[in-house]
Every structure is written in structure tokens, then in C-alpha cells.
Image (cartoon, rainbow, N blue to C red; front, side, top):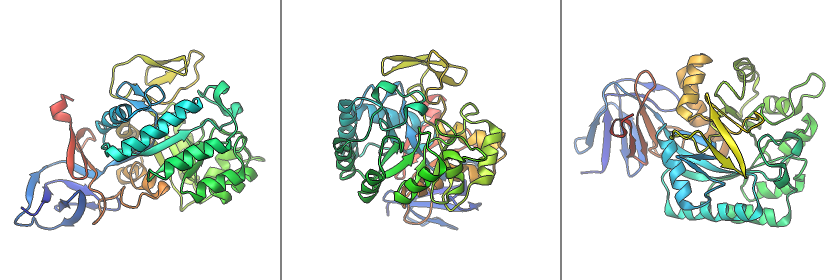
Length: 388
């Protein structure tokens, strides 16, 4: 056989447009074509009645499958997290380390490098969310661990980027200089502004220096004001800043989501993130983070004082929220979980099902329930076999 797989009978969304009565062809882990016909020597897979869409890309995943990356910064932990999120259509994710001690950060960097070499399915890279944040906008981050970026911190990040294709760090101008942002940018590290009380002018200066993203829009940042637009104002008005959004109905009110979608200046886009914790894919009622208990109740994760501590949501649920609650067209909700995050980090081979792109895709039922998840043209999760 030629090694070509032909997926027939599905309605296909390639990340740009829908295709009816077409065939998805893959070969050697990549998309070969969306065709009118099946090659004579292809392996035919009939998926009649399903939807095929680009696999979801999540740039902020703290845990899953019972594992918090902070608590288990090793290859096995990364693999467990990726596997848990694959159950919900995520085919590529940035495993995220929340503010922690320098030794944990170093272990996380080494684990990410090892996971990259091991080609863990679904592992895209590392997101270091802190510790160089603002105590004033700490959220659930432990204030005792927040600190200024030093030369050694830069070395850990740049050393990590030398061996991984994608490294992202969330920083606050309060604890990171413009010169450090330029140094990060020059090594290819993606810099995101977040957990900061900075104003519009400072945020704009940091965007000019190389910051290209804003972490979980509206949360843990200076709000939009009519005299000081804050980081929210910068995020929406600056066309260079891509913005992550947690669409769970708790982190951002639907009215604010609608305003942001209408106000965002391009070409940079708003994309979906889960900010998911270890509870995804489990029945756990909570977990420990930096010695503090996080409680799971009613779709929310909180500290004892009620502070939101990450999210208890998967990417497919975020898409359904956008489509059903926000009345976002399905194709746009899917782009927010695939094409737009790929654009935000420059992952040029992901986020669409176009010739030459990675054959990472999800199969869904017409009512947006999971069927299966495919990475590099191979099925890695089957909802039917799992009993879901």
C-alpha cells in the first residue's frame, strides 16, 4: 500500500472552510489533500456522519489525569497530562508550570526537553506562568514565590528554548525589564503579559519590545478604564497582541466575552485556553498546589478563600460554550481552539487540515460529542472504546 489513509463520509472543516462529500487523505503523518476521490491503493476509513476538524491546541494546561505539572515535573507527568486532554480533542498543548521554586522550574525545563526528545504524543512545549509576576495581581500564585527575573532565570528559559520548538513565558512588567523581554524575544521565546497591574503605555512599550500575547484575558490584570485602559485595553486595541480566553462561564462573564470579541483589533486574535488543572479526566474532588488545598465544586476550582485556582474545563467544552452560549458560528469556535492558537505561537504546520500540515484532527458527532482523536494520522483516543 502507498501509506495513504482515506477518511470518507465525514463533513470536513479544514480550518478555513467546510467540505461536504469530500475525502481527507493523509500520508506519513501529514495531510495529503482533501479530495473528491479515493486513491486505489489507499487504506479507506469510513467515518460516515461525523465531523472532522483540526485538533485542538491549548497553550495553557497546568495538569490533567490526576497530575499537576508543579507536583510531578517529569516526562511521565507530561505524558499523563497530554493523554488526559487527548480525550477531549486536544492534539497539541503547552504544559504549564505555575509560579514555583527555582529548583522546580529547573526540573520542569529538563522534563520538557526530555519529553520533546521522547516525542510524547500531544506535547507541544512548555509555558512558564511566573514566577516573575505582580503580587498585586497574583491570583492563585503563591506571593512568597513571586520575584524579579534574574540572569539565572533567563538562562533556564533560553536553555530550554535551545532544545524545544516552543517555549512561552507569562511575565509582568513589575518584575521583568524591557531589555529582558527583548532578550527572550531574540531567542524565540514567546512572551505573554499577565498577572500584572500595568497600564496601557507600559503594556504598549512591552509589546513593542517583543511581548506578543496576553494570558487569560480579563483575569489577574488591570481592567479597562475610561481614563486608564489598563492591560485589558492594550490587549483589545493592540493588533500585535494575541489573547488567551478561558470560556467556562466563571472566569469571564459572557457579556464581557462578547464585548471583547467585537472589540479585538487584529490581525492578532482571541484564542481559547483551558487553564486546566489536574482534575480533567478524573473524579477528583481537589488537589494540592504549593502546599495549599484547591477545592473542586460545581465546575469551579477555588482556594479556601474562594479565589479561582485555574479551571475545571476541557477544550471541547470551551468550544461548546462559545458555540451554544455565545452563539459563535461553529467554524469560528473551532478556529479559536486550533488555527488561532497556532498563529499565536507561530506553529505553521498546525491548526488547519491543509496539504503539508500535520494530520492532527478530532472526530466529533454532529451534536459535538467526542468520537476520536488523531495525532500524526494515528488514532490515539477512541471514546467508544473508553466507554464514554
